[in-house]
Length: 124
Image 1 (tube, rainbow, N blue to C red):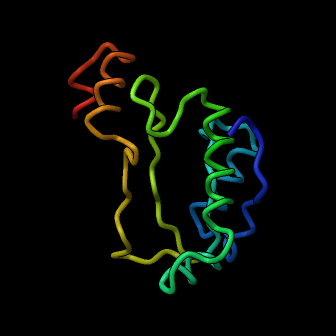
Image 2 (image 1 turned 135 degrees about the vertical axis):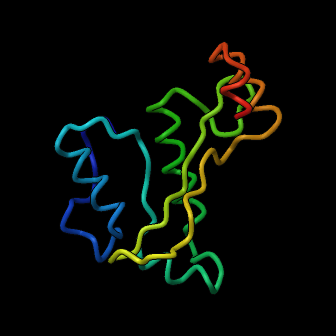
């Protein structure tokens, strides 16, 4: 987000299709929200458990997203919600669906309702 990205569009083998495309759109100045991408190499290792150091890297990336959005993951008053989008090197029909609103629970939904002024939106 904010016009910056560590990746580029031609990095599909490392970032997956969605990750590389999002990085390229951010570099082009399109309004891409802040986020981070787990590489295809890391994804391939996840079946055997979390690779060493991954947790700390994800927490560091999450802290950067929190700083850029001025929201906090799990905060009941100003919740940061995430979307998890799988992306392989090449399109794979039938691949896992998108997981939206990671971080939304009863407490953060109430906070989102207060911040948005729209209870229905928060619980929809």
